[in-house]
Image (tube, rainbow, N blue to C red):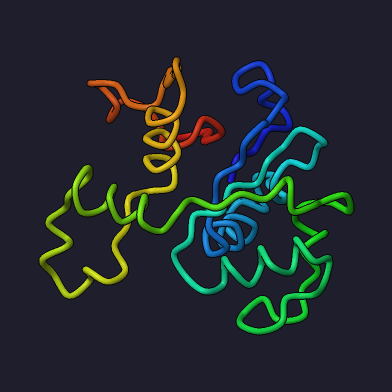
Length: 163
């Protein structure tokens, strides 16, 4: 989850594209609530980009697009406007094509995990998928601070007070 409030000088105050899986969204809301994360940013310009790694993603996207409650699964009976705001529409919802994610996993970011018992649940991180999608589609991409040679000297999150 991206905590923006209080960090606008570092991360800006606009979010045009918010990439997540339903699992990472729910886990972030639980794990980072104490740090101020309340869910995805809600604005007229924000597009919500689902990273499909479970049927939960399709169920939440369908519910958001149709303004209905999630029909089954762990989010059953949840109201998607809680996450995306009352004016969410199909136009604001996007999803990475599963074949693109498979391509990233199998060809672009091949991992030793694919030779283990975890091969069926391994996927590139949300951030890596987002960055590589941008590199595949945009004329210019700025990945300032994404990864540096001395990354071990820094915290995992800009909002971490200790590391």
